[in-house]
Each structure stands twice: as C-alpha cells, then as structure tokens.
Amino acid sequence: MKTLFLIRHAKSSWDEPSADDFDRPLNERGKKDAPAMAKRMIRNKLGIDLFVSSPARRAKATARLFAEAFSHEEKDICYHQELYQADSSTFSSVISRLDDKYQSVAIFSHNPGITDFVNSITEVRVDNMPTCSVFGVRSAARTWKEFISHQKEFLFFDFPKSDAHHR
Image (cartoon, rainbow, N blue to C red; front, side, top):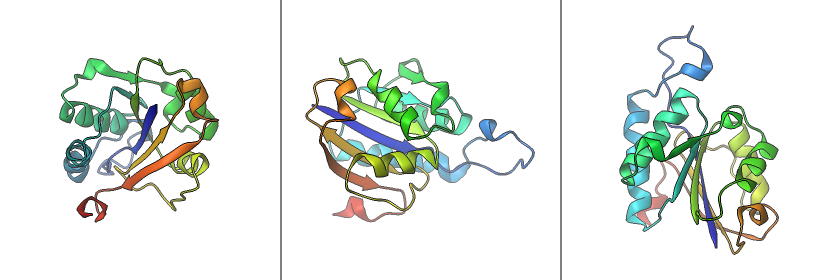
C-alpha cells in the first residue's frame, strides 16, 4: 500500500517584485500555514516517510516546516529540480522513481502543474490547489512504479482556510 500527499507550497512573498520567481520566500502567513497544516495531518494520524520537494525557495521552506513538524531533519528532504514548473508527466516520472521502501510520500511543488496532476489521478476534481493545500491519495500498489497506473483511493483535500479539518 502506497500513500501520496501532494502539497502546494505555502503562501509566498511578493515584497521584492524584481526577485526571480525561483527565489521568492514564504510570507508570514505561509510560515504559519505550513506547520499548521502539518499538525492537522499529524492529528489525523497521517504519517510521511519521505519528503520530496521542488528546490524553489518557497517549496523548500514549506517542505522544511512540514519535515520539522513530523520530527524529520532537513537532510531527510529530497530535492528534484524537475518539480519546479512541473507538468503532470513530470510528477508521474518522479513518483515512478521513488524508492519502494517508503510507504507514504509528500511531494511539494507548484501550480499549475500540481493542480493538473491531482486532477489526473482520481475522479475527484479541484479547481485550484490553494497555497499550502494537501491532496491525499492511497493505492494498493506495491511499488511506486505501479502507483500511477494502479487504482487510487481519494483520502482528503485540505487547505488552510478550509473547514474540512473540523469534520
């Protein structure tokens, strides 16, 4: 059984309009939302064995805050350059190469690719993955290579301004 959490980076800062997109940091709300969303997952007894992230500054910071909440260190995060500005096929490629020793993986990336990808893997559709949103799916696949083609079960979709965590 494999569980995948797709997480869009937390809210980024636009304080420096001339800054390169890759280098935009999190804003104050983003720095609060990421640990809060991680804590919601922990309260719901959802674990993460591996953290995989785009190397863009805002995605890295989000992954670090999640890893810290799950008592992992920054060295436990794997960075994949191709997750920056990734399309659906890139997500599939990264997932198919994951080490099968990991049962639950969180991938931190960006729009529009992350929204396109989550809409391609189950019957559940989201208009937009808001910043710091989490989309969870599970599959009975034994390997990550089988995960993409294998039947997947939608687990949840949650985001900072959602009331989903109150159910």
